[in-house]
Image (cartoon, rainbow, N blue to C red; front, top):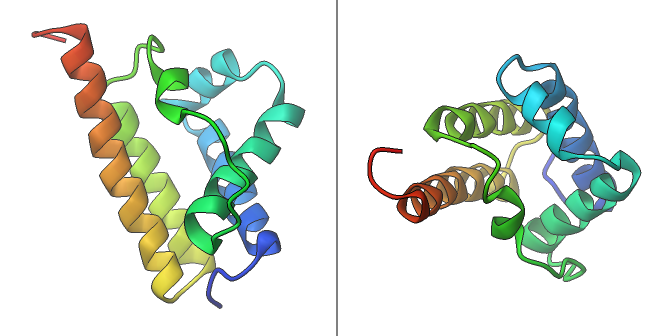
Length: 123
């Protein structure tokens, strides 16, 4: 195993993660419903993670807005973080790999909390 260092590593991570997520019984239906154009979606995901992990600075956008209104609950985020962290651990080691998992955990929590607050109590 090696460190996450370049665009090829980002592509490998993202492709392997989405391969798992699409097969997951909880996340798969969400992705199948939400993503209409995978050919456009995947380069955005490479850009997003490349910007976060290797300083590529190619992603421009607001990832939160895409998730709003998708009916996501804590279990979705917990499963996403678990699968993403497993994918990192299966393929990479080192500080950037740890940063990827930390970012996923932190943002999973932030997104879930923010969505819950926006939807109001009891959601």
